[in-house]
Length: 78
Length: 268
Image (cartoon, rainbow over all chains, first blue to last red; front, side, top):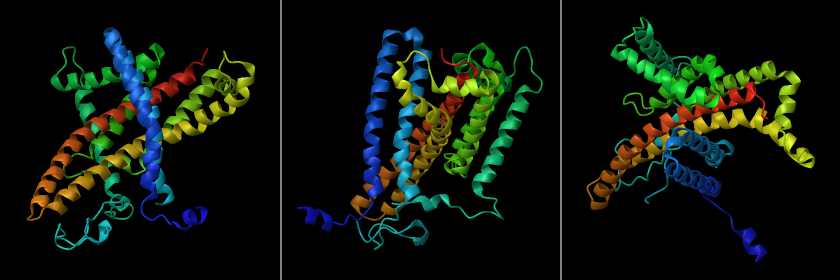
């Protein structure tokens, strides 16, 4: 089994797989952020401004991780 | 798929589905544009043109302010109030009013730089070249580091940053270096990469669908359906890009305000 795995040479774009893996965490995170944000707005519509601002802030911080995964293949070569 | 993927630079004109050439997938080489002369490239030209447009617009809007504003002045004031009330006063507070000109300039500079990506004829987001967001991020970094050292004291600024109050003592062994690295090193890196990668990815995505619409246009059912779908996707994603571009300019400005607010008052 070990020999078999060692014989396999991977061709094609590894960077795409890396980006797919990097997008899992931020995907879940952004879902939680917007889900809870919408819930908060529904419960307290008068606080819309503050909630939206903090929602976008959290979104930006989580999204940065996915974007790092997107840029990495271009930086380190596919 | 027919044949191998061909790099963008080697595509022959008239390359369509069924004419024996593979899909010319766009790659990072679409961002390397031949300079007009010397080192004067298209992004530099668009950047200067954008700055000029902003200056002309706001000079026209604010040169002779009236008590009853003209149409142009109303639009300018809407932009100003959006930055002052929506970002500066919400994040920094009343004493943030002296930073409104900075935030205002950053927002419109980034936004017009991004907007070039969907304006026909230009169609190149300035901020998809890494040097431009890096320059902006370095400016922001210098400002918040300087403000922090001036308002909290050169050493107190770093100790306040590394030792936020209200934690068990043992946590500080791990927390202090993490806080230092994230505040001094990671902040400017993520600030620039967030803007750059969004514009880079958006432009690449639009190019993929545009090239696909052209490549698939051929006399067959699959070709016509695929070409029409790709063209529709180009239109949809252009609208989506317009949203992302404004959002990224807003987020860049918002984070600048957050960093400045953190430098003005230590956490307590």
